[in-house]
Amino acid sequence: MKKLIIFILLSVMFISCKKERMFHITATNVGTGQPMPYLHYFVVELNSGTFGEKSKTVREGDLDANGEANFSMKIKNTTHGIRVVQPENNCYVENLSLTFGSKEDFYADFKFAPCAFLQYAITNINCESVNDKIEMYFSRFIDNNYGSPWIILGCEGYVPSHYSQVPMGNYYFKWIVTRSGVSNTFYDTIYMEENSYTDYELNY
Image (tube, rainbow, N blue to C red; front, side, top):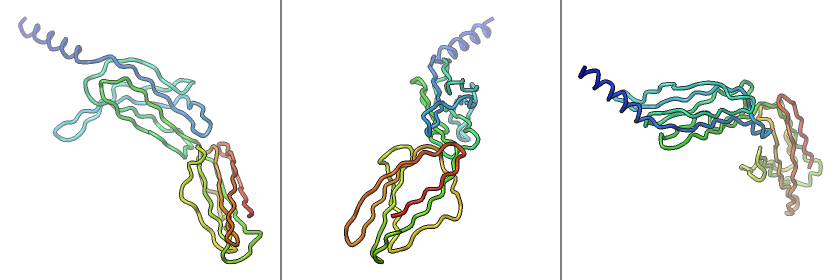
């Protein structure tokens, strides 16, 4: 009888250590801003032990037609991870797995973008001298977030040899042409659908 009472007390203590937490999991196609439905997700309990970190799946399921899952559950006072299985034909991943403490609600947003195909040609049709220069910048998804330039000097150009697999969505182009010491800046935007093939020609 004494052992039974101790077992019951330990069970009550164990249950009381668990806290109710809200979970909100979403997946978004960053190329369109639309939700990505029916992706499979896992909620994993993470514990540190003598032989390293141990993980245990405590819940799994599928996102709904709106690309989200909303539920509450009791969890232990330990770190948890949420993982989403990325879709097929995917060319962009932001947050495939996220980790949370036990003292917070879980808001996990996963971002993906299906693939498209792009090739572009650059031709200096008004070449003046070997001092001509074009600085080519591009950004995807977010305007003005340009990276380092691609620089072509003189009368040289670029002729594509194949299509490159890239994430679908908006692409923002910026190029600076310098001739005879005078620079001019130009901008353009294109949108690529999923699985589309785009030929972009830049004549300057």
